Each structure stands twice: as structure tokens, then as C-alpha cells.
Amino acid sequence: MTGRAPLLDRIAAVVGPDHVLTDPALTAGYLTDWARRWSGPALAVVRPASTQEVAEVVAACADAGVPVLPQGGNTGLVGSSVPATHPGAAGPPIVVSTRRLTRMDPVDTLSGQVTVGAGVTLAEAQRHASAAGWEYGVDLAARDSATIGGTIATNAGGIRVIAHGMTRAQVSGIEVVLPDGSVASHLAGLAKDNTGYDLAGLFTGSEGTLGIITAARLRLHRPHAPSSVAIIGVATYDEGLDLLHTAAVSGMPLLAAEIIDETGMDLAMRVSGLPWPLAQRHPLVLLLEVPDGGAGDGFDPNVLGERDVVLGLDATDQARLWSYRELQSEAFSSYATDHAGGAAHKLDVSVPLTHLAACSDEIRRRLDGYPGIVAFGVFGHLGDGNIHVEIVGPPADDEGVDLLVLTAIGDYGGSVSAEHGIGRAKAAYLSLSRSPAEIAAMRAIKDALDPQGLMSPGVLFIDSAAG
Ligand SMILES: Cc1cc2nc3c(=O)[nH]c(=O)nc-3n(C[C@H](O)[C@H](O)[C@H](O)COP(=O)(O)OP(=O)(O)OC[C@H]3O[C@@H](n4cnc5c(N)ncnc54)[C@H](O)[C@@H]3O)c2cc1C
Image (cartoon, rainbow, N blue to C red):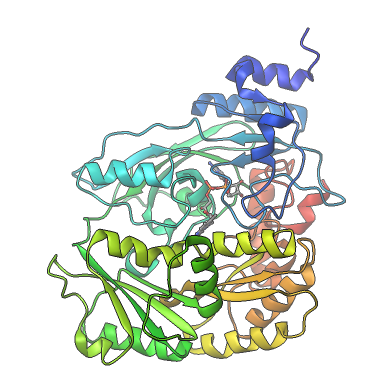
């Protein structure tokens, strides 16, 4: 007699009692998100080690009518990787952590592909590809914790989208456990395979609402040549975009094109102790990375002109320049902890490039005078029209400030989620970016695959929270 609910005993018989966590000291790290904005209770955190174990855990939950929440590295920024607490939320779920799904097959050097488990971290997959002379084309600052399953479930973007596209473009096959516990596996990764619906494409970006990804077949790239990194001061978004345009027409291939505003630079300097990197202050700083063949001459002097520039040619300098950008999210969160006693509002949005400058000005105007704001900054992936708006001050549950930004994005024809997903944070605002017919089609897919509504209730669709 364990004293536990029969469901937990059934799951413990599958994964072993040590991998059914109920002690608050052990589950805490799984139940609050990275940004410390969302937190909620779970019946247990379960850590299966194989696809078969995931299937048996999900089947047990389906039989018991208990919700299931998949979790990878818990670095998601839209509240979908942790349980909900809001009124009307479905009962506490079983959190299924994928971190023990660490299969890593040898790289298939003929096809340039590799099959890995969902719990392999992005950094581990990158190192595995690189050891075989290939490169995985997704990269982001949370690489040491974010998992392959999580990056697929969110269709993650990151700093290499300008060179390789989003995660969806890198996934050639997928293995998933469906909400009834059955396993759908299609990992052959054939270059040509027109045999019906593209399940890999469907599950990429599904945010845990359709099933649990257990493994994926990834497309790899030939490694890019040694690169150079530059930080360049610019006065406006349009000036930054003009520079990208000039680079493109002069044949300068970009591996990354990131933007940081002055507030973000100051906060990165605050957490790192790094100095301002340029000779002068600028409202915006552009970070570019280009391949240079190892000669350090990747930057066309005609593109850089007489601008205020600092170049990083060796690995140490490049890492230093990149750290201003990579520290952005952490820097705003740290400022929020110290000055607002809480979480930063992190809004990931995209806007057509032609409207980026006007939309950023409009957001700034609308936020001006909003109660309680102590810091506001913008950084992001300039080449993709993807900005991250960070607001420190308003309480974590103040959705008014989020709505203000998202409606501005809608007014400029943008997307309320560029790369982080909809999650819980933006479920109420999906209609700002998708039409009623599109949402009805998505709902129909969800209802067909998950008729009990047990997979990640309240994520993506606001109404499924009331189950
Ligand atoms: C410092 C920092 C920088 C970041 N930079 C970027 C960036 O540049 N670009 C970007 O796109 N994102 C970025 N993110 C957000 C985050 O890293 C990504 O969303 C990442 O893809 C989440 O991966 P994860 O393994 O942590 O997933 P989690 O946070 O655990 O989960 C995210 C979502 O995926 C679902 N999920 C996880 N694993 C599975 C699975 N195996 N099957 C089905 N569903 C699953 C969860 O239920 C949840 O809905 C950043 C986050 C941080 C903290």
C-alpha cells in the first residue's frame, strides 16, 4: 500500500517509483516557468525514459481522464510549459518531463540528417552534429536547457533563422505519442515522400496540445565558414534595415542580424559588468555575423562605411560581442527581480519590415504613462522583423499592458507570436493574428486528435481551459 492515487501507482509501475515526483522540493523547478511569471500545481512530475514508457503513461492518463502536460527544458516564455492556476482551469495535470529521452543516433552523413530523442538539449544536438562535420541550423541563448522536443513543439526561431529558417524547416521526420497513448512514428527522413499529411509539420509548433514528441529526424547543414561579428551603432530601425539591404545587394551573406536598444544594452552591461562597446552612445545597436573564410574580411567596408563599429574576429571577442545580445532576456528578468519584485513581461512579436520603425514608435507611445513601468526595452532578430518587447514594473498578472502591445502589433499587420508560441500568455489574443476560419480548422484538428481535451488544456485555445 503506497497511499498514492491508483493512477500514480500505475505510472510508477511503468517508469519506476523514483521517476514519479510528488515531493514539492523536487517538483518546484518543473512547476514555475523560466520567467517566473506562471506557476501551477501538478498531480506529479513523471520522467519516462523511452517512447514506450511515454506511451504507457499517456494511456494511463487517458484512462483516468487526467490532463497531461509535456515539458522539455522549461525555458518557454509563454506559460505553456507549466500547469495553470486560473479559474476554470482543468484539474492538475501529470507533467511529463522528456529530459530522459536522450537517444542520439549516429549522424547519417549521406543524407545529412540525424535522429535524436526529444529530451536531448539543443546544445547537445549541436555538438553531436558538429563532431560529425555537420551543423544543426537552430540556435538560441537557452541552448543548454532547451530540448529538441521543446524547440520543435514551439517551432523555435533564434539567431540563425536569417540563414536557415525556423525549426520547422529543419525537421524531416517525427515520432509522437498521441493523446490515447498510441505511437505515430515517421523517422525515415526521405527527401521525397508525398504520402499524405505532413505530421512532422503539424506537430512542429503544436505546443504540446496534440501529443508528446518523443524523437525527431533533423536536417543538418554543412558548417558555415569561420565568421566575423560586428556591433554597429545606428540611430533608427530604418537605418538598421537599410544597412541589411545594402549588405544583401552587395552579396554579403548574413548569418545573424540582431538589434538591441540602449535600455537593453545598459541592462546587459549591468548583469555582466561589460563596458559600452562602441565609441559613442546610440539609440540602437546592430549585431551582424558574416562568414569570412577565416581571413577576417567578411565585412564589406562599403557596407560599414564611416559608422561607429567594433569588430570581433577571434572566438573570444565574438563571444564577448554576442553576450550583449544573449544576456537580454536574463538582464530584464534580473532588473525585474531587483526593482519590481517580480517578473518581466516578455512579448515576442513580428511586424512587416516596412512597418517596424513606425510600430516600435507606436508601442513606445502607447506604453508612455502606463502605470508602474520602471523599464521598457526592445531587442530581437532584426532581419526577421521579430522584436522582443520587455516591460518591467506592472504585476505579472497585469494583462492590460500585454494587450496594449499586442493590439498595436495587430494594427500594423504583425503576428502576436513570432517564435515563442501562443501558450497560455496569448491564447486570448490568437484572433488578433488568425481568422475565425483558421482557428476553427485548428480546433477541428485538436478535437479530432484529442477528443477528451487532455493534452495541455488552456494552451493555444482559451476555451479548452474549462474542461
Ligand atoms: C534566455 C532565453 C532565450 C531564448 N531565446 C529564444 C529565441 O531566440 N528564439 C525562440 O524561439 N525561443 C527562445 N526562447 C524560448 C525557449 O527557449 C523556446 O521556446 C524553446 O523552444 C523551449 O524549449 P524547451 O525544451 O525549454 O520547452 P519547454 O519550455 O519545456 O516547453 C515549451 C512548450 O513545448 C511543449 N513541449 C516541450 N517538449 C515537448 C515534447 N517533447 N512534445 C510535445 N510538446 C512539448 C510544452 O508543453 C510547452 O508547450 C528563449 C528562452 C530563454 C530563457
